[in-house]
Image (cartoon, rainbow, N blue to C red; front, side, top):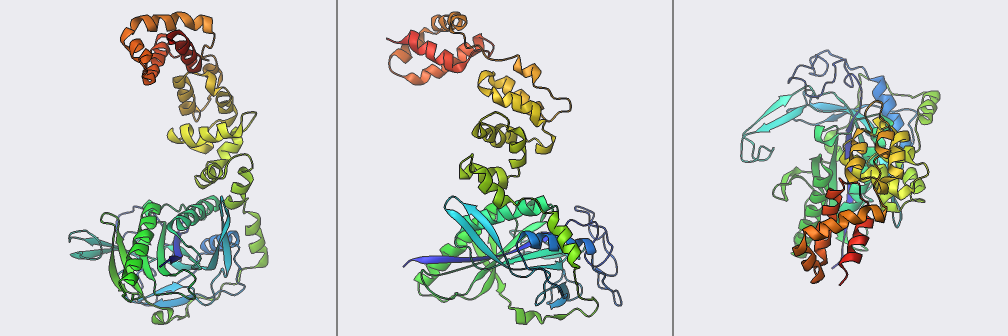
Length: 468
């Protein structure tokens, strides 16, 4: 039987604001526990919320980038459920009238564009953070006790809900990486998964290929790693297919994924919208964004990552263009382009520059481009040092360009002859048919010339002189 995965995502993003969504408590990652709280975010009786205007602007801006319809009349609602980290007993969210309605996000691939539908992008407040302790794993399932830090409670949270259009773990990974890069470029969030400012709930089901409708789905909660999301999806697909092929029926449930064991543990049955008893938040007026505000935010959106990938792949292959954009290094790539072949520049950006862990914005592109243009003429250590220093103030290519390699065969022949005479065993091994030893001999010549010999010329000279 042929099975088809059906995947939808709920992506939660902490918006980059100075204060919380409905109060004026400062937001500070890593602040001592329960020190960024007030009567509003702790739900003291009589405390009233006031909406954060910057968070509303960020939501509209991202909604525009997702091609969403921007609501002329958005309503905050109370989403009712009980959990220890939710002091009010409800979460202020949006449901029937969100700020951003239907849209779509285009993910370029080598075989064409994948279009993932967006159901909505709505604004809400985050819950507090529950820390599970004790037990064998320290996770919520099996923990001995839990502690609550209310610093995070009330943080502006944007939730993007996709249609179930994704059909594999690879597609989900590409979508999330490109979405994250879009979010970061818009400046609405740091979107750092390791800090929890970007996390995703993943809904996975399978069905027979060609089957209409959807089967019960499993929701994998609060995933904060691209790798773990991929593995969690693969585990859910694997277990669901195995269950159906055993003749079992599945229930719609929420699961925890343990990356250490690659196993899923059922957490609770999955709620539906009716279980939350949504109703309009009586303490907040509707949000009605002025048209001039929407247009101002639209004008601030630069060329989106998906469009840049298609533009860059005209000079590069698709995978290289995708990696440049998804990593946020394509702007440096374009600043380095001069008379150098694009692929040479792209490889330098994605390999040597990335390995040097440089801030792309700090790199002196004008000077570094001169070095990359003659990469093949520089000793390896000289080129590496130029890369590592290219982000320093006052960096100049001149000092490195004087260290070009020697390709004059007549100047290199004495060093080649000396290495052959000094290594008779390796010479005999090479002449015996083991060509792998040639690399050792080339290295000895480079050492003899203090790295200034052109390796290609040395290789050619050695082969000629060692020919039997």
